[in-house]
Length: 495
Image (tube, rainbow, N blue to C red):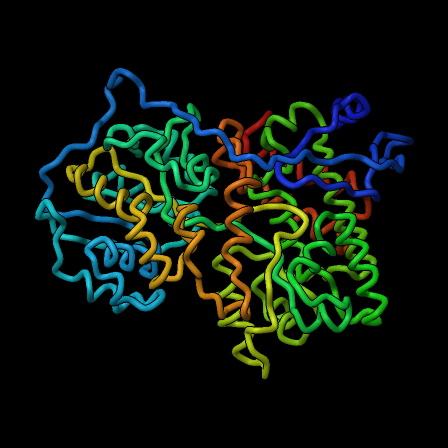
């Protein structure tokens, strides 16, 4: 702790990626009389990265190195996933029956693929894993280690590196006949999530999950005089503007309405999906001393909570949903899947309003939230089927357009999303796909070389520390951060 504090004054502020913003109520932190004191300054906190992330063309290793390589001849093509709302519908699209599915109707999709075969004659088989999150990760790992006949399997960004960094668990896309340029029309960040520590592509997704700030249009008009998404974006275009809007909103609503629904949602936007608040990841910034951007977020949330700009409400609770239902929050930070899951299906199920009361803008910072990546078992004996399935759902414009139209996914293809309207009625009459397509294409920066498989666990501990600090469990910012550091050391197995 003392060593970190002694380094703090000399630390160069770490620049984070995505949209440029300033937060005037932050400053330089230093140690005085054993505690943090803040020197009030105006600090440029991030730099703007508005150009497309460059394509990395790192092939698989030249020699085999003793690793398994995909083969052909298998009689059953099996894909494993922890729910039946995604893979069965993708398989239905794969065999040309996309127009027969309706949204995520898993039972209909399962009927459509029952008894079907691939072009090689292999039986199509979907394996549902009755586990979620880390349990799903462990289950898939055990199935692969036990020699289960699985050709492809689903992972999440939180733990995909546990698979892509292990050649015994994941095949190289190069070994299946792909190159990085195969996904020239994809959103760049989706590919970088699927890279291993050396930059080789080993995981791919058919969809993208860029996020934004979804807001109640009726409340925005009543309290802010805002009648268009463009005008709303100006109100929340950076953290300074959003704070000013929150202050005004509190005054005119007499404290009834917050600018954001939860601390968890704010953290999603602030971390830009990379989880660490910086380009170089959690571990790199820890070795340099205090992560100043993490400290800024701690203070921002403490200030916003004490001033009534956000409530310390946990996500996915009834209280969290009720804020949108009862009109006590202006908006939620959500990604593409959240528009139906949160705003339409759940929020409007118990209130006498309609989905036309919501629109979405990019907000103060670009981010992504969620998504599913597919990896190939290097021991697969259905390499051709794996190739054809991946090509169909993540490269072929026709099939991806069908997935967007009939399944309702925000697919990982810039050309398709430029012409496809994904459930436009879920956010009133706004065509929101171009808004988030720009976020996904130009503004999300994800540096695979700095990502650790344990980062998601560390971020979860940090968000909990933020919440505890906001509600007063930790009276001092240094106490909150020190507690978080100790938990991070345990996760990373630091001495």
